[in-house]
Length: 188
Image (tube, rainbow, N blue to C red; front, side, top):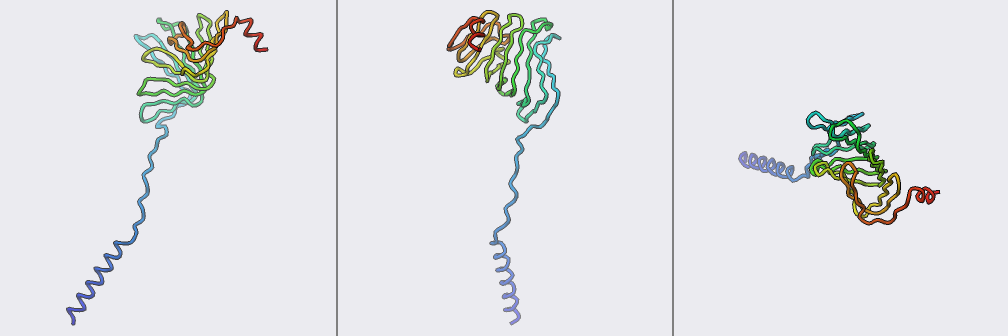
């Protein structure tokens, strides 16, 4: 009898363990992957130079750096291009929002984008613009409306490609050319 009770007790313990193993376990907490910025910097001034000559200056009230090397300037930014000697401003680009895609070496600028060629007094207004740093080219999507103002005329159209100093440009689908006097009277 004793041996039977011992076996029965062992079987009950074994059944209890097996039944306990069948209970639903609590799910382990899911991993949360952080995708936000790794670093935030206020009052940013970035200088790009070559051979001790300033080429590009970027200023922004806030910059956010991400793990993949991308940068975000969510509160506006200004990019200033200098001449070969690094002494005189040639071109400026301002936007409400800028993202730098590190993998493509591409700046994406959105919201009231303004490009100004200082020596030629040319201005470009659009809502989205791309600046490819490695190709030294600025451009828009072919469906993006652009307005270019020179000292003598206003040109409008869709899509634009230009060199980074905005001294040479082409509008893909021009829709209008007005003298500056005509453009001012149309705006009234």
